[in-house]
Length: 601
Image (cartoon, rainbow, N blue to C red):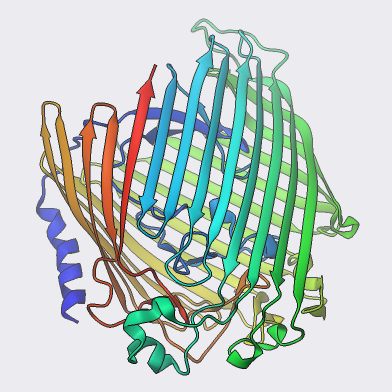
C-alpha cells in the first residue's frame, strides 16, 4: 500500500515543474504509412525515454510480454480484433507489416544504428537508412534482429525483419507512387510456463527464488512464423490547373492500391509431458502435435477520387472505390465497396471511411471509422475517434481443423462500437483520454480453449491522464488509467507509470539518469495457449498487483548515445508474485546496455 501511495504521489508532484522543452539531441523526420500516404507524421529521434526492451512498447500502451523477448504479447489495455485471422496475430508486434512500415521523407540522408545487449544473452541490433534521390524520389530501408535465450528454460528466440520502400512524385505533383516490401521470420521456443505442484509454491515456496531451474510444462515445443508483404500504390491527378497562388486546384483523379502477403505458422511439440496436468484437453489429444497453417492474400483496390496535390503528395478529399480480396482458402474471398472523405484546414481535420462487403464471405459486413480533430488554439486540441463494425468473425473461428482442434461453428456477426475522445493542453503537455467499447456477440476462447460466442453485451470503459513536464535539468512523465470491463474482458482496473529523469546539458556534455516506476492492479488474466498462439479465459488465479522499478541512464557522445537500463530492479524484494499470465513470470532483474548512433551525411 505504501508503494502504491508513493507512486501516485510522484504522479501528482510532477505538476510542480515548469514546462519547458529542452532536448538537445532531438531531430525530426517526416514519415507516412503506405496504407495512408496522405497524413504526414513527425518523428522525434531523441531517445530520452528508454523502451528498447520490448518491440511495440511505449510509455502508455502497457504492452508486456510473457517474460522474455519473443513471447506472445498480452495487452493490458483492451483491444479486440477477432475479426482478423487470429491464429497469425500472437507475435505481430514484432513484425513489419504493410500498415506498420514507415515511409520516411528526409531533406538529407539519415542513418540510424541501434544495438542492445542483455546479460541473458540477448542481442537486438537494427539499422535504418533514408534519403532523397533528387527532388522527386525518397528511399528507406531497414533491418532488425532478435536473438535471446530468455531468462527461464526453453525460451530461445531468434528472428529478423527487413524492409525497403521507395516513394516517387512527378515534377508537377500530379502523380504519386509508393512501393514497399518486407520479410519477417521468427523461431520461438515454447516452455508452456513454469511447472510446480501449486501456485503457492510457485510464488512463495522454497524454490520461488530459484525459478531459473524450475521444470517447464513443455519440453520440445516450437513456433516457426513467417510473414512477407509487398505493397504498390499509385495516385494520379491527370487534370489540374494552378491558381494565382501557385497551388493546385481540386481535380478528379484515379488510384490503385495493391497488396500481397504470405503468412505461415507452424507449431510443433514432440516431447509433450502429460504428467504435468496443467494444460487443457487440446494438449492431451496426442503426444505429437503439428499444427501448420498458412494464408496467402492478394488485395487490389481501385477507383476515383476528388483531390489536390500538396507538398509532393496527392491529397484525396473524396475517394470512391472497389476492393477485391483473393486468398488461398477460396471461401475467404470477398469484395468490398469503399468510401473515404477527408477535410483538412488550419484548425480542423475530419475523416470518414466506410467499407461495405459486396460479395463473398464478408458479404454484408460493414466498418465505419470517423475521426475529428479540432485545434482550439495553439495550445489546446480536441479529438474524437469513433468506430462501428458489424462483421462476421474470423474464418478460423468458424472452421479450424487439426489433430488438436475440431470445430465447425456458425457464429452470428460481431457488432462493435468504439468511441474515444481526447483533450490535450500543449502548454502544460497534458492530455485526458476517455473511451467506451461495446461488443455484442463477442467471440472468445473459453476455459477449455474452445471458441465460443457470448450473447450478452460486453462493455469496456476507461479514462486516463498523461502529463509531460520538463525544464533544463529535470523531466517527468506521468500516466494513470482506470478501466472497468465486463466479465469476458480481462484487464486490470488501475494502471500507472511515472518517470523522473535528471539531465545535465552543458556544452558538449549530455547526461541523463532516471527511474521508471510502473504499477497495475490484480485481475483474472487470460491463460496462454501455445498451440493456438492465443489467450483463453481462466477463473482460478489472480495475477497482478505488480510494481516494476527500472533505472536507466544515457550519455551523448557526438552523434552517438550510449545507454543502460536495469529492468525490474526490485525483482524479489516483495516476493515473486509478478505475472501477467499465470505461471509465466515477468523477467527477473536484468541489466541491458546499448548504443544508438545516428549519421546525417
